[in-house]
Length: 359
Image 1 (cartoon, rainbow, N blue to C red):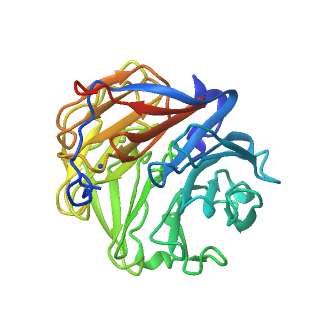
Image 2 (image 1 turned 90 degrees about the vertical axis):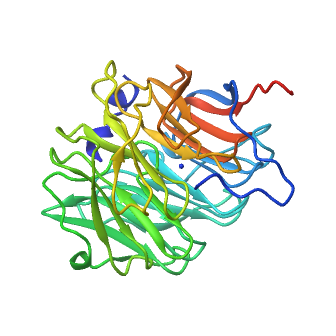
């Protein structure tokens, strides 16, 4: 969304996943962050951990980085022709195949794809609608995914692919709930859109000075339904920033007002029926707005980590109570395991380190 576009302004959970048979589930304990990719010129806003070894991050000036060894080493890439845009989302399927999405009005909203680990990139989609501003995307599999744009004249623009990004088409706005004036998403972390296997998909909104909503599909985008959440949206700077899916039933949304950095809001709401209804949970101890969040698979309870420029925190009870981790400035976060989670923002990428009593 344009409200988060200027870089000067920028700077100023899956239910606990099933472990393999016999593999114990672990908790987050006494966590700290360890910087793994360190470059003061970088600014990362989208991240995707594929497994315990493979993680991709994307951000400003067309920069994308990838690690295939758990963050011990990194490959830095600059997507040709994308030096003037900001990547705000990345979705990968392994060490070779990945998509990244840039934001902006008109042709600045683009999707690029690589199939060779970032050695080469192809333009998968370029927006030609001056009124569209794409924020986030997500994929069900390597062939099927959808992307979300802020609304214009009462309609959301959703596009979908069913051929791995070779082509994209607009989802008929007649089957999507009408948008409120100014309603859109915050392109703060690449987590305003989420998908789960079986055709489940969600996008979360704000900035309408009305209700915030989660709009969901259960059939790969062939139909959509809306639900109002208790996260406030009194101004264009307030609403839901990030959506986390624990499983097909349990979800959380987090947000706030990104201009009020010294204030902590009712910034977490949860659903236990797939996003059909929502209720407030505990306040995450993060000022302003929570920008990004991730469920933490392979834990004994519903565990979530939330991040923002004003700090970061975690919950082990589905968002009801929270513990502060650090004051580090992160915008985006992704976990595949309690010992395999990364957060990124200005200056680089960090990995969460647990300090357990038995270590």
